[in-house]
Each structure stands twice: as C-alpha cells, then as structure tokens.
Length: 108
Image 1 (cartoon, rainbow, N blue to C red):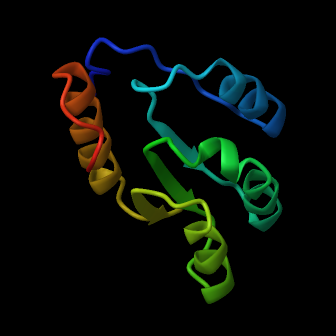
Image 2 (image 1 turned 90 degrees about the vertical axis):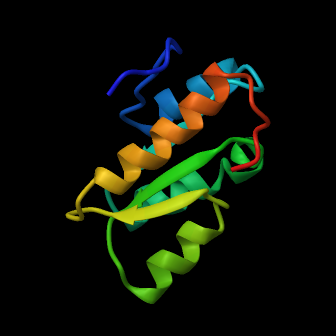
C-alpha cells in the first residue's frame, strides 16, 4: 500500500511511541497501533490525551469486553483485532491518507 507520499513512522515500544508523539505535526498524521497485550494497551492509555486529535486505528490483542472497553478509551476511528483480516485496516488507512493527500477535511 502506498503512503500517499506521506512519511511513515513505526513504533515498536512505548519509548518510541512517546518520541513519535512529541514529533507529531498536526494535520497529516494517522496512527495505526497494533497493541501486543493488555499491558501494552494500558500503557498506551497513558498517552490518550496526546493521541486525542489523531486519526487512530487500533488493533487490539483480544476481543473480550474489558479489552474492547479500554480500546475505545483511545477514541479510535477504527478497531480491529489480532488474527483478523487486515483488509479493513488497509482500507480505512488508505481513505485517511487519501484525505490528507487531497487536503480534504480531517473528519472521517
């Protein structure tokens, strides 16, 4: 999948996420977060205020009620789950990136 000419930044741990959040430029950032486990999700919730204005796609580690409840606290545009087909994630990401590339409003 093309990135619509926008830079991509992969964060593999909470330290990299913190550094990436501090570099964010408002307006052209989409975050896709594949959270490895419940602890990773809870740690990411510590950043929810900083992530609040970002279009966010979250891939949760499980489908249980508590995990989904915590995932929604991140206010994502889209939620998927580990082990699911990522075609929908790709589609949502492409739509968001296309909006940025075409300077369309941020609303999804």
